[in-house]
Length: 269
Figure 1 (cartoon, rainbow, N blue to C red):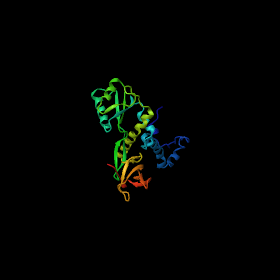
Figure 2 (tube, rainbow, N blue to C red):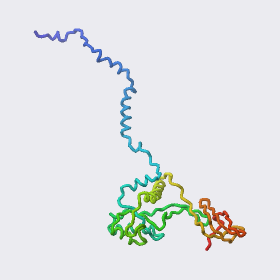
Figure 3 (cartoon, helix red, strand yellow):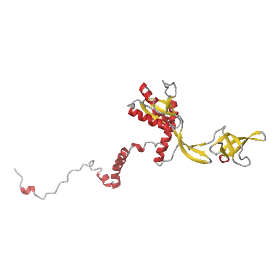
Figure 4 (cartoon, rainbow, N blue to C red):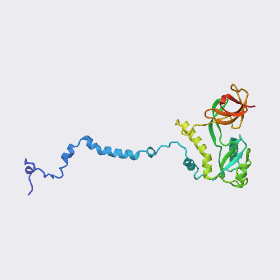
């Protein structure tokens, strides 16, 4: 028997649906959460993501720019060829470097002749009481070359203007040991590091330039100070840092040491 419309739309009281107590147990707790509490997990995730996205360079220690033997060894490691010492005319070291590099290119020897170095240094030069910062060749009359030794590469270098020969066994030069190369090239790396630091506005970590004087032990000079003006003396000690000399002069028939400044003597013509 079908149900009538009156029965369907009758005003019977509604029956409450059964409520699962366990399902609603956390609702009250959730309502009590503050906005800050709800955002905490999101903030934690953001912090983790920020750490993951941070560049590795931030965690890497900064390079202090100090040049050590290990620094030089690391730069030399894996380079092709061996290092040799060239003897050159004094004062032609830089010109020899340029000419060898040019000849290596024009004679297609770039796969055998790799690098030429003329170690330089900065020093304070004292002349006539004036101190001046100058750059000079560290080993006058010599240059360093890294190359693969063959008949053709040897001839290319040997026939370069200003080269008098390889140091060692003439036609069959002996390559430098690693320790010798490190010792000779450390000043080159130090100078490059100093120049890079200056260009970047950073402090230079290398030592202060040495002070060299225009006087040598055993040299004869003339005194220009009273009461010995015009008297000759022989230099026995040179203190370039303090611009002082110890000279030996004859007084009352005896050779006597006298301490003088650079300005109290002059070179003999």
